[in-house]
Amino acid sequence: MKKFLPLLSLPLLLILASCGGGGGSAGTCNGSSSVCFPSSSSNNPPSTTTTPPPSTTGTTPPATTTPAPIGKPSDFANICTPSSEKSWARAHLDDVYLWYNEIINVPPENYSTPASYFDALLVRSRDRFSFTSDKSEIDGFFEAGEDVGYGLRLVNSFGTLRVAYVQPNSPASGQNIQRGAQIIGINGASITTLSADTQIAALYPTKAGATNRFDILDVGAAGSRTVTLTAATVVGAPVLSSQVITTPENKKVGYIVFTDHIATAEDPLIVAVRRFLAIGIDELVIDVRYNGGGYLYIANDLASMIGGTRVQNRVFERLQFNDKHPEQTNDPSNRLLFTTIGRAGQFLPQLNLSRVFLLTTSRTCSASESIINGLSPFMQVITVGGTTCGKPYGFQQTDNCTTAYFASRFSGVNDLGQGGYTNGFSPTCSVPDDLDHALGDTAERQLASALYYAKNGTCSVSSFAKAQGLREEIRLPELDAKRQLWRENRIIK
Image (cartoon, rainbow, N blue to C red; front, top):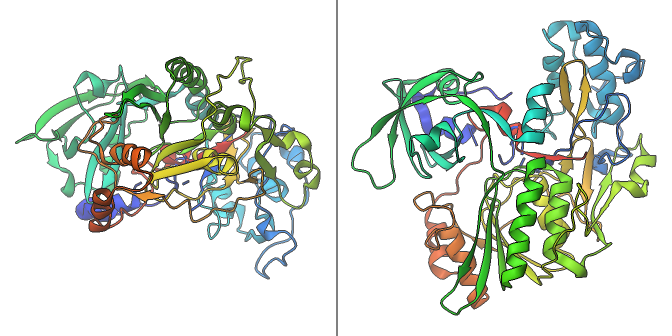
């Protein structure tokens, strides 16, 4: 968990609060983005588990690292006492962690919970993505899209707290809160006078039924309004919208707003692509500017539909594990191939495009970056927006007692063996996010720039000038670090 500064300095907190990456919430990731996979039993990880980057293989551990603990994770699994759970966490990291040989030993008795002990053992100089969560809570999000809150996605944009998007049928949508709205007050107090903890408690309630009042400044409004929001379990739509845009040149452009690689994304993605195929689109724009990742198989499905026959049976992503598990790195089942069949057995429609546009920001992480990396050997991948979070590492959720552990376990490379993009993917066209226009509005800067490139084969001069004229938004963990880590993941199931 990141620590937060008092919000007397809101711009600084906003800097600290950002999916790329840190993504965290998981932290979706975004230096290198993480990819998450669904959970497995703690003792028998599936053969498809991704491997951590081999960057430390064969190196001599620093003198400050500790010898491996005595015992295996199975010696302590599901013995639900604080001492045994801490022993399990230490043994688990020593077994699967990409940087197991750089762990600095800390006394377990200094930490009140197994989760805090796990966090203290992580090699933070390399790893800002690994995390823990309550098992039932994380399963509800990745499998069903369930999240307690108001249905708002908030971002820190150049010193202001603004709404990136609103989930349909949520408390926020019921109050007509829309993209771009700025939160300027909470429960009658200016946001600039409130501590970070106070803001977090109000903005990210942990239980349904919690009620708070917010002063909202809508885009273009002369004054603010006050709304009362009551938290609920919101079932999010990972595919917020899809549409076909007809350009003045009578070209048809498919556009999808894709926010989370969770299990419930598969069907709406297939439905959208089937529609695009029936209409006969000429270009495709995937908006992943707020997509920190999730299940890797969802990324594989989408990339397979985009590439079509040109990519079939080639490697989408090859998983590489630490040097304790060469059998996993060499296991053919740890190569994710482009496919024509979805996880539930559905036929995946094939667009057979020669190029694709992705709208990106520093919150574009992990599994979203896998789409860029996996397709790049086979087609032109044009990114419009900002540099991605840089998370080539992934997890396999491993449960012990009531806690789900996400340790960076593998790194991913494409068909040409390319990976290691810890600095993210720089955009083809640098264009700032435009919170003053709705997603899908052809006047919105990033989408407008993609359409310009599709027509002219080059970046828009006006968009480039706007990007140069703005300081780059600093990417920080969101106000609620836990949820951010959830969303910056590359996970194998």
